[in-house]
Length: 296
Image (cartoon, rainbow, N blue to C red):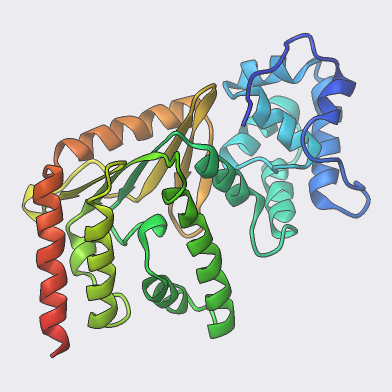
């Protein structure tokens, strides 16, 4: 994805980029985008570049918010609120952005932006202290997670299919280089059944043998670490800023430079606590065998 833009772009040219603007009268994303554009111009920012520089984001963040292609994430919405609507109702931009995301349907736009970054990425960094990351999940493991989250069977199957489709990036000729660090607790947390866990960890061990996947485990003996507050993943692509996806009650995708830098520091810290690749794979295989024994 291209985040590089001519700083002399006119307002009209900026609106023509990205996905076409839908009718602001019927589409919450289009309505929010149009209001953001109006507020930007009224505030004296004649270009998206100028506002982006002021807020510390890449121009594409502003451009896609204004076209309705990607409603602003919570951190971007808060920054826009403070800069463009300082005397307006508190949290107005954030509430409108949440409404716009719900309008998207089964795949919200904040995750579409992550999927786009993930698909184009040259490199991915993944930290996960709780579960096997989505890119590495088997269908049964993923389905058990969705059922545990309260989805019904049909919806869970739909979500599993979408998750498996994401994994195609690992099999393409020029797959991204993935560096994934997992807490050892992930290997011992029962998701579904012991049989599901055995198959999942066997699959994980096979992935760990791939040349472009570096999989490391932080052993339980390491104690506390900098990443125990939650999982996240970073996507990087030549010519584009890194994008961060943080896991929680609802995943959040962000591009703020300061937040991305902090996540990178946390990733480096937890990776420093991890075992080497060979020892990590041995730990995964050992855990898989324990789950196999549990089945009998």
